Length: 327
Image 1 (spheres, one colour):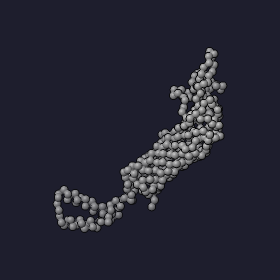
Image 2 (cartoon, helix red, strand yellow):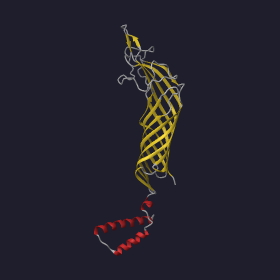
Image 3 (tube, helix red, strand yellow):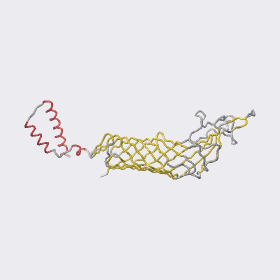
Image 4 (cartoon, one colour):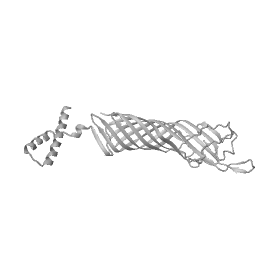
């Protein structure tokens, strides 16, 4: 350590002398001979090699030799977007029209419950789409602008399909036939085991490692292929009056009637494949890691076997982890 300090002091003196020489434009043969002798002694000394074990910055920085283990989950926002086009399935209770992924409800009357009398239950909650993840990832740096990443964990997803029917009618109190809008809703909640493997590329940032401190901060892009297995599934299908709730009720005195509740869909495809893409920011200080990531999944497989129903996921993840340096 003392030898290194002496070397650094000598280099600093060399720099000072060089500046003074250029400013004063003085030449001194005796001094030149002294510095030449020092330069000869320092010929094999490289400042960067002695200071840094690894240093790379800018566009597509190369990684130092390390591994990572990070636990992360959905944060701020994560949701399921269902895509289906007028589909029918043996898994569904029959409806007049097929199911689609877009909601037919108007924004103003979205699943309102109109109170008919004081005894009506107005606290019933209606399902919504959602996605929660509790996962981990392992990373092995490849000493080039690439990292090998493996993800695994639990996903809790909630998707929905809608079938809109405007052909229904009823006889009003005045004896006039009146049409109304009835919406069939299918809600699917699943607990799935998910694994992904892919490559992560640092796009811009820095990797710095020395015998004193190690730091990395970079933006990255990632692509992976994955698979999921639905461990538990609960499907509920109900119909609901979407308009004129103040004039009409089902036989249960409510605007909603359940057709099937918490069942397993007969044609459910439990094992599915997907592609996942993400962009994020990674920060590490010594062994501590913080990660922030925007991600989206592109489904390859359908939710059911007898129709095309795909679920896309978009969200934000944050994670904390630990870093291990390879020797």
